[in-house]
Image (cartoon, rainbow, N blue to C red; front, side, top):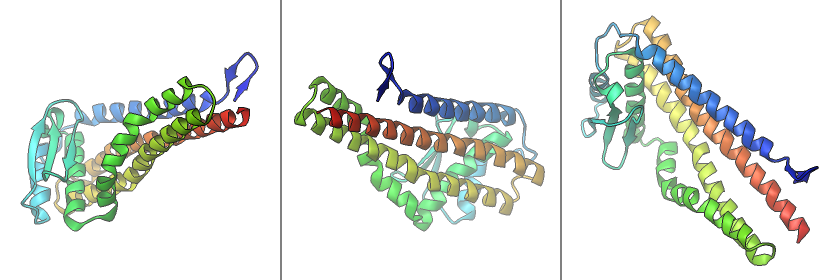
Length: 236
């Protein structure tokens, strides 16, 4: 879709997606940086909070380990491990406690057989292939010019990109539910007082918005690809 001077009007979707993603990322970093400096009255480290929540839920087959990097925290259902980054593992900040509890939220999901988490885990291979092959397929299609073979490659590429977008959408309920469980655990285990609980909620909400932004950006990019592909089809 080109208008005047060869301008591709669909780039507006890319720009909007970038703005959404950058805004969410900035907010997450700013919120984390703020509460990273606020020490919790509980004086518990991220590791201690994770272990307390896991044990409180009768989960004894999940380990807690440190990993390098900043905000590289994650739960891996394959090896039953809560991995906490260096700024979380040994920190007693409100931000660290919130993130550690969130990752334990995923461990609890796994323990109770939370369907969206199982669906996301099953979808990982397809999403990985989709993210790796989408753009190469589209580029090959463009390189071939116009014609059936070109459109086939582009269709495959868009289909691959769709898989990655679906994964991002499936991730949303998983992340929001993990944060909900985290806040409930922090309250029921008396880990954070009410004031700090509100601060932890802000950290988790800011983190959740990065997933929303990623999904929104993916949908916008997919819409752009569909519009561009339809335009090519009409010119064949």
